[in-house]
Every structure is written in C-alpha cells, then in structure tokens.
Length: 400
Image 1: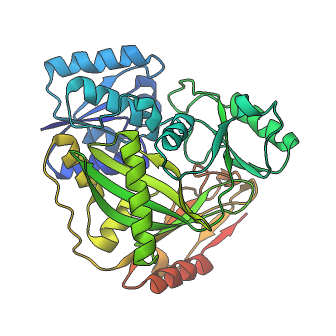
Image 2: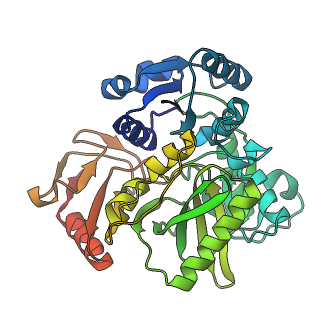
C-alpha cells in the first residue's frame, strides 16, 4: 500500500516514516525542493520511495499537483508529520475520498481563533478568547492575559503580559514574525488574547475511526510558569485520579466532535482550573515531543501505527499490554551562551539525547524550538521516572 506524508522532515515526521517502513508501506513525501536540498539528511531521503515537490506558499497549486499525482499513482492513505499542514492533509484527504475528518472548515483545525469560536458556539468549556484587533481599542482587557499568534506552533511567541505597553510589544513582534520556517509561506498575522488559566496542565491523546472515539491516555505536562510558555517535560500515564481522567477525556471528545473529527488522531491540551477543566487547544495530529514514544514505552500502545492504520482504513485495535511509566524532560538554557564542553556519566548515555554539541551557541529557551536536548526514562513507577531524570540532570555538566 502507498502512504503519502505531507512534510515528514520533523521529529514526529521521521518517527512516522520509520513506522511506515516497518509496516512495509511505500512512502510518498510531499515537500519543497529547497527544503529537501537543505534540511533533509541522507538517511531520511533513503527511507522515502518518492518525493512530490510543491510550493506550499501556493496552496491551490499544491493541492492540484498532489491530486494530479494521485491520478497516476494510487494513494491509499494520507497523513502529516508537520503541524502546519494538519488542515491541508484534511482538505486533500476529502478531495481524494480517503479516511479523514468530516469538517467543512479544515482551517479550524489550525487556526486558534476559529477553533475558539467553534468551541464557544458548541458550548465546549475552553479558555476565553478574543481577537486583538477587535478589542484593543475598547480598553476592556483584564490583565494579565495570554497573547498568541493564531496559527503558529511550538509555543512560539506565546507570552503572558501584564499591561498595555507589553501587549503592544508582543503583538508587534508576532506581526513581524509571520513567515513560517523552513518553507517560507506567510502565516496569518492576527493575534488572539486568552484568559490566564490557573491549574495543572494535561494532554489527552485520542484516536477516532469512523466517528468512534478511542481514548489512549492522559499525559501530565510540565510547563514554564513565567511570562513565556514552553513545555519542559511530560509523564505517561498521568497520576490524575479516575474521576479527573474521565472528565478530561469527556471534555476532549466534546471538543473533537465540535471540530468535526472523524478519522485520525488528536492531541488535546487542557488545564484543570478551580471551576473545572478547560480546553486550551486541540491538534489534529499525533502528539509531538516524543509523546508517542512515551506511550509505547509505558503502555505498549503504538500511537503512530494507529494513525497510519486509520489513514489506510484498517480497523484499529488499541490494546494496552504494558504497565509502566515513561517520562521526558527537556534541557533548556536561560541566556544566550556558547557551549564549551558537555559531559555526563556512562550510566546516563542511553537516556540523555543532545541536540547541541561543544562549540555551539544557544539562545534562551523561550519556546519548544530552542531546547538543548532531552532525557527520557521508562521505569515501573512514576516516582522512579522522576528519580532517574533528576539523577541524570545532576550528573549532566554543560560548561559555558
């Protein structure tokens, strides 16, 4: 069978490619030729059977080129490895009559403003959201608030602001950084303002096939609590009690129904406030940040295979065959520095994964794209996961 992946050149995309090859699938990747030349390593190129080069800045032309390709080479399923294309993959899937979501407005799967309006319309509990351009002149903003681009990713330029002066600065920065990297297409430069939600944060990983929802797990999320927002780590499965888990899953499914989810997987982010859980946003894709690996390590559930099977129309059977805990913590930097030397014990070598090396210059980790590496651990108990992550952190030395 032939699977099409719209932009696999991401961590999640490479994981999808490797999974698809293990399943014996023929892979067709859609990307830009300049990205293929500059950003793809030879190993990833070798794993993919065929490439379709497009210009993502020209959406209609991109869709036409993919559809023309599919007329000559049958495509059995379509997925994406890149969050920015979670709406495009639905549009194309619908045009090809492949298993995908039923929404008539695929944009709501990527645009946080459109998503928030749909939640409000359907009575789904979520963070109160307004569009900056519609409110900033009315002086009706109750600070502090969260400021976000409507359709960026990775917590990029998501900020907590305390006053109008800082608000104007962040909005200006968002509007000046409206070109996506590495493909170079223009992003929507609109800005949303959300209420600050206080409470523990979770994500719910869910699969849906033909409108039937299959909750996979609830993930504990560890995030910054400053004026910027970045995810510092995750633990699978969450320690939340059954009542709390059920309430999170119920709300996440309500959100998915409101958005028209029908065939695929979802990553729903929620915060449990004093008045109950509220949705922050939902991604129409597998979770990032190696969460699929945590799920497989801890529970034995292969979320990426589930995603591929749903895309191909294969019946899914989600079965937990492990009872462990798995966690990841990301390595960050607080200031711009040049790394002189990195060292850690041999005992930690299997669990520490670095994205940088001696001699590299690093910038402050204000989002999910400026990390130095991660530590991933799987153990029989949640406490052991935390213990060994801290132990590895204590033994890791980064000299600047």
